[in-house]
Image (tube, rainbow, N blue to C red; front, side, top):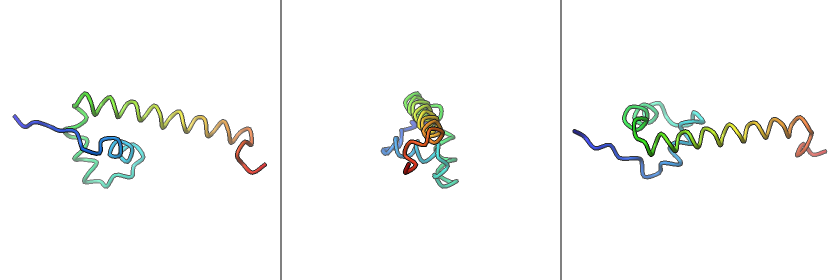
Length: 70
């Protein structure tokens, strides 16, 4: 049985994956073995929630005009 290891740059890999900035070949390589890894899955979930929260706050700020140079 092959031992799957998390990428050394796990945070950067997960962020690029979620933002669609990871090249296709690397995305596939990440999905196949690493999505079954508890550590990678946890980091993926955490980062997804963080990105979603940041987008939500940015949308709310745009609606109030904050940070729009006003």
